[in-house]
Length: 345
Image (cartoon, helix red, strand yellow):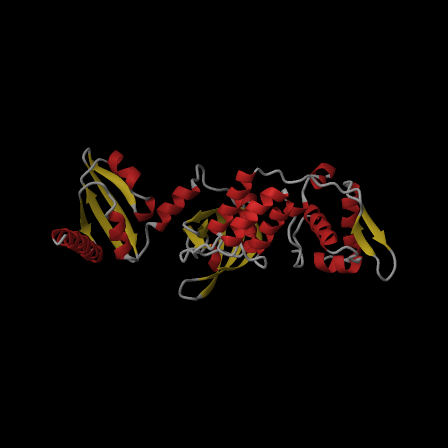
């Protein structure tokens, strides 16, 4: 316990603005108690208990755990007294090179458009890291953070961090969960699932799972999960589960428009160029490959097919045939306009 608690820098401790969930472990509550004492010197046992969601006696016990771990927490009696950190606390610094720090900030800014906002949870956490850096490195990092204006990713849908954390823990512990879920149309339902994995794809977070209601594997968007209840039941994930490949395959079927495409190239040539998100490939013979998939957006699907570096024929789905025809005419028109422009110069 001593080595674990004593080696965690304060910038990596969780934010404790909200009451702790009742299923947090004693170690987690002790760490949260440390953060509260750090952030509010003089906090009373009563206030500490309220923040932790426990009794005053339990709050005092968590302070005792910290003291046993070698963290000097002093207590002062009287109306202005309470808990505060003593002078003996020495937390190790974060050691980042300038390149590492800038790379971290750039990655955060690229993936989260509110990372420059100190009131946003990600922005607040990033600010703590910046404040822990040596001044020359922090100055470079802060300059990038302050002057960068990331464009919002309209396709991204970031879920609630607490919801995501609960699902990740359920996946790791192989515990069944009951989800409150809101569909794209806005209807609410409750489902029980075996959560296999959390997968991030193109800015969206999915829970790959086995649905007990549908008796089939499903992929639910986590930003549409409205509630998570961890159940007592356990499960065993499928042997050889590949979460990324399974999600890609799942997202390629079950949509409004079914499509079949015959490609005049062998499977080994086509496979590296076709995402599993648009369907499954199978060889028809040594020189021909079949693509079977589905979509709700024929225009998008036609654009994906246009990237295949071989001749192909859409043998099923009039909607996608029409979308491909319109795409071809648009590209042809663009080429003719360019040729006409050259003829006038």
